[in-house]
Amino acid sequence: MITIDGLSKKQVAMLDKLWSLDTTAEILEWMDTLNSTDQQMADVLMEMIRLEVTDLETAEMNSFPEVEKILKNL
Image 1 (cartoon, rainbow, N blue to C red):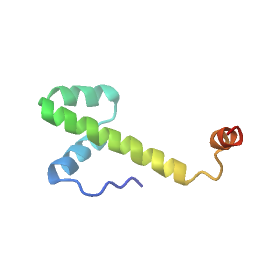
Image 2 (cartoon, rainbow, N blue to C red):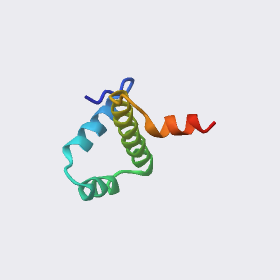
Image 3 (cartoon, rainbow, N blue to C red):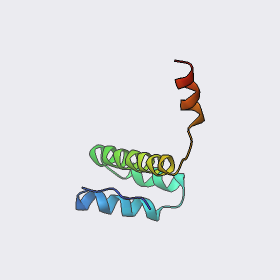
Image 4 (spheres, helix red, strand yellow):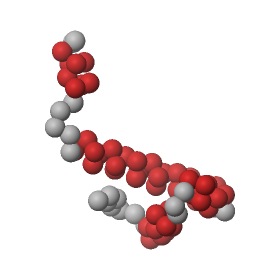
């Protein structure tokens, strides 16, 4: 489950809207309706989602072969 704490009501509403959209085309279409400040906020929120997903995936990993290879070569 993705959790992002400390968001404003506006940011939560924006994320709710993003979750309701099904395709990249719908997201881009919606973003075109936003002013530049809101577009930037939407971009930041989407990046926060990407980072949270990466954090969740990393937390589930038991081994890190790429990192281990780099550390062995030091």
